[in-house]
Length: 162
Length: 162
DNA sequence: CGCTTGCTTCGAGTGCGCTCCAAGGCCATA
DNA sequence: TATGGCCTTGGAGCGCACTCGAAGCAAGCG
Picture 1 (cartoon, rainbow over the protein chains, first blue to last red):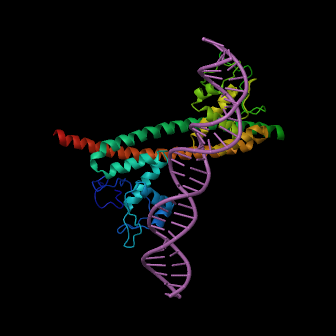
Picture 2: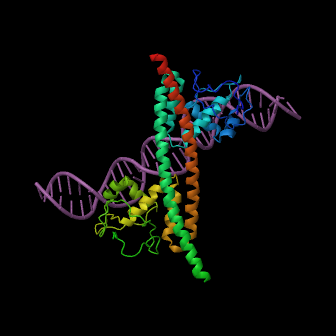
């Protein structure tokens, strides 16, 4: 029975409130929770992104407008961090930022866009599968070449030492 | 007896002549062979690269200087195509062009650079393995989200149709 | 109060990997 | 001879994803 943080059943995903995060497995953020209001530099530390990049994400619509403190500073929530997790994942699939922005827009538009979101994710999924296959192929080539060099090295050593 | 071009046993790899191709499995190029002297546009068609990119590769040292016809036009060999195959593979691992140039330099420097070449390839190999793991991780996230949308879709349909 | 720290904004700059352009050469066919 | 097509070169330009700079505000602390 692993229910680490989940007080409610895990139905928090893609609710009508707009954010589209994967709450299912508890992510590993250092997240105090309760009053989750991280500064931009904290988020930068968590994610490895720079504060510049975080603001840029917001500007281009890749993130919803972030809550502000009474002095106008950004205060990120756990939800925002989860979204950044997803963005990070999508980013390393090679998905263009423009497509991620598109997805973010769909999420903002509410739950009438499920079908389109699914299509987008499935297209991405196909890309990822293809990518993995390519990489495996490359891995085979690398192994062949590394094997060649290793063999060459061994015979060279054998010559040298008798 | 399939001995397409190989008169000598397959020891053509990384010989002292400089080029570093994988001759082991006969690649699938439309390669007439014999007098393999492809024009730049043929190579562009084979590889999917543009002629511009092929010249650029040569300029930056990612390819050895290509043979020329008596009028100064480039004439690519099977060996060049094999090299381009490898470059293509490395490219889609995300390896920076600068590193590929480094590898090409090592190849040009002769067979005293085997150790360094192997290190470079092994570092690349590690990157690729890590990359595959990341992509698999991402795939799991995508599957989870796609599953969510599919379920939502199904229950919505069930509501609609009774 | 003065100082530091960290935040705000907009807009310009950077690095990578191409991508394209302009001007011209060579050669085959009409 | 003229026209068209494919090739050559060096260098400029482009799109993406950041990345940084400048100017200024607000809070906290001695």
